[in-house]
Image 1 (cartoon, rainbow, N blue to C red):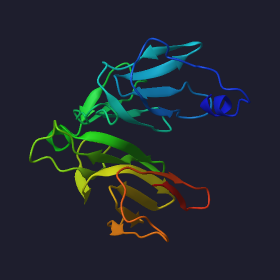
Image 2 (image 1 turned 90 degrees about the vertical axis):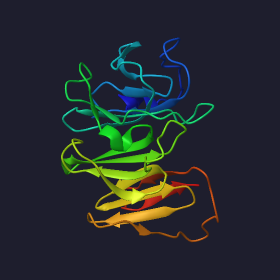
Image 3 (image 1 turned 180 degrees about the vertical axis):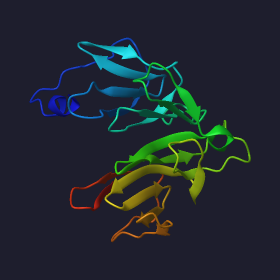
Image 4 (image 1 turned 60 degrees about the vertical axis):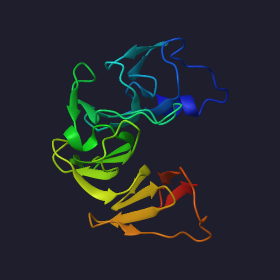
Length: 219
């Protein structure tokens, strides 16, 4: 499992050697016994298979991954680390282990880069997608946090403005934007959040939920 790999005293290259270029955007697993999934900004969702990796998707740039407890996969499209930000086609969804895929999000997400996808562990029909704007986005495209309550069939803009990361701790959802932090509690609307000694500005940042219900934010 990925957890066992991370606890190994010596790190070894695990691939995919020569298969994908560019950055690894995400590495996830549905549970400790399941194969790991890798998202490549240069293209595709990959699944670990013994000593190698198998391509599961069509090679579109993948910028975020989320896996439900039942093994359904949500893959956000786009490239966040190239010479320029590349937009995608929305969120790709597979409920058969990556054998077939459906594109979710429609025109609302087209041209945006999906920076994070989260699934509510208590309600897998509730999905959030954080997005940022790109040169591929149309003038009408609105970056921000999109929420779906029907497993990705339809999406509502819950927080406007570019958002680079999301973290869910219990019933609290933290959105990290460009020089902004916003918090939603118990399904309510997002509200601005200010941290002690918070920098005046930043471009990108990451957030991780903590076991005690708080968040670790790297600015």
